[in-house]
Every structure is written in structure tokens, then in C-alpha cells.
Image (tube, rainbow, N blue to C red; front, side):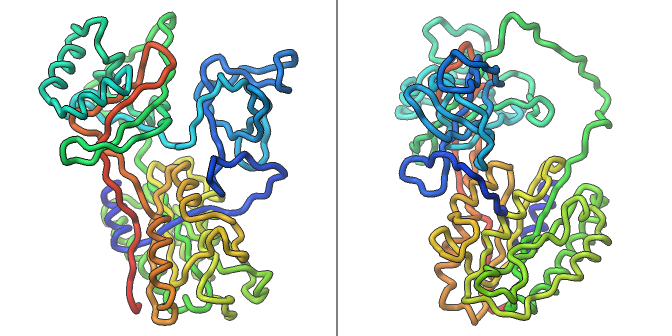
Length: 441
């Protein structure tokens, strides 16, 4: 199902991002960043206090909860649930882990690959990488698997023998920082991760494994939300988009998968204070819930028309449309999440006075990552906007860039450890983006 959706998207090409929220307070920015906020994770036994001292009321918080940092005072931090001013209280600084990467990892099924080992120190792993000693690694791996590792072993944990499906048994392994290295001629990356220990006092529940297939499990669902430029210049292409979606849905229906895919659509224009005749900045025509019924989808989309007024220049607020799709869509029931942007114009970046979001391509992309959303862009390179093609292409490639982390065959990771410290592991990586350009459409 996932492969088919990706192939369909490749044949139809698109992208995404979120909407607008105002807040009385905003979090602290990361050092040298203009749009990315400081975030931390709470450690076990962390507590939230009403004021930066331990004399007032407090409440325990769940380990590895994500918090935005709004203020720092001595050894205390003032934290909130989100970046829109929802303040929770004060937390002691040593009860939080800095988490600026906002990325996590999950484990592949070890059925066809070696289980992942977790190293107790970066240096131990770095030595193996530098020497590229696969024989030493295999010897180390066998000692751990056969439970013959000594007290001086650099391995403090290993991935469970049985696969842990993150959708059924959720776990969180945050990435604290990373470092690029080479394993022979292969580009690689060291990741420092955090983990919460299992409590030995609590019994581990087991369940009987049946040979019968599990017919009660939820089917894999995909949500595809289109973000379409509906300004004057897009008039000829809006109808083409409808036809493309119709063909995609027909292909899905032939495979008997129509109940597993939902479509949504948000249209965007540009700053209506500058050009009131544009009527709106963003407008959602179809939600993913409504788009589960393809007839309802087209009934709503058929009312979408291009603006009769022209915007100020050859840039429109695409980021506002993408941001709206990200933040105003309920993605809860969808395993695969796609936002597809279709436009013939460049976006308004963070330094543009007419930008409604004030966000850069990188910051928008981070919003998508945080919700597990893949961004796809279809850039229509029409002759009218030829002077802006090069800059526009660079921005949309940045927006749709994906850093894919792929476990190396002798990769190193773990889901359990003996204490709440962080360790290093190795991943092979590759990068790509979801950008297509179509000339003179």
C-alpha cells in the first residue's frame, strides 16, 4: 500500500506545510536561529512547579515529554506544551534533556538483519568505525547475542530479538545530536540518543503468539492533502489537478484500496491586506475526513476557481497554505501522511514583509517532520515566472528535502538500557527531496 501511494504521488507530484497561530508569549530561539525554538525532554522523576523553587505545588510529568523553553532563571527553565503560549510551569534544568534535533528513531524488524547494539560510549564506537574492523564487530555481536559479553564490554544493550512495532507498542528514542563520519567509502552518521530504563521491579507482560492472522488490526491508511495555488495565473492548471486526482483515485479503486486513502485540499492565494480582491489567504475546501468519500471530495473541489485578481508579484504565500494543511488537518488516523504543493510561483520567505507565517523553508519542513508528514512539491515552470525559476527551485527543494536514515547491516541501536544516560550508534544515511519541476506546462 505504501509503495503504491508513493508511486501514485510520483505520477502526480506535490508538496506541503502549516497555518497561523498567534500567541502572547513565544519560546526562546535556538542559538543563531531566527525561527527554531528551544525544546527539551523531561527525564524520569521530573516535576513541574508553579514557580522556580521547590516550595510550591508541583506535579510529576511523564518521562520524555516534549517541552518548549520560554525562559531560563538560574538552574530553572520555564516550559510550555507548545510554541503558542501554553505555559505549564517551571522545571529544574537537570531534569530535562536538550532536544533541539526534534528527531527520533525506530527499529527495523530484526528478522532479516542483525539486531542493533547500543554502545556505552562514543569512543568505543568511533574506534570500530575508524578501523573499519568488521571481524571485530562480528565477534562483539556474537558475544552479546550468546550472552557471553564480559563486564568490560562496550555494549550496554541490544535490540530485542522480537520485533517491537512502534504503532502497537509506542516507544520514544530521541536523537540528541549527530556527527557525520565515513565507514570506508560510505557516508555514515553517529547519533547520540537518550533512553529511559525499564524498571526491573515491574514484571514484563507477555502474550501468546497465534499462528492465525490478526484480522482485527487497523488497516494501513494514507492521507494526501493537496495545497493548491489558486491565484489568477493558475487558472488553466486547477482543472488539470482535478483530472489528475480523478485518475489517481480510479487507480486506487481498481486495487480495492479506496477505503484506505483519503484526500484533502487547501487553496491559498496571497496577502489580502495588500490585494483585498484576492478574497482569502488560505481556505480549506476538503478535510481528510470529508475526502474519504471521493464523490464528496469532487463536489467540494468543483467550487474551487482561480482568483480574478492578480497578486502583487510572481510570489505567493505558499508557506501559509502548507502550514494551514499541516496544522488544520487531523492526521491522527493516518499511517502515511503527505502534503502536496502545486504552484507556478515562488513562496514568501521569512524575511518577506508580506509573509503571513514569518517562516523559512527549513522551519516549515521541521513542522512537517514533527507530525510525520512528507512534503512533495510540483513546481510549474511557466514562462511568465521564468526570472524567478532558479531561486524558487532552490527554496522548494529545501522545503521538500528528506534526510533518510537507513540502518546499516551492522547498525547499532537499542530500546532498553541500564540507566538514563545517552549512547551512540551508527546509521548509514542518504538524502533526497520530493521536488519536481515541469517546464512550460
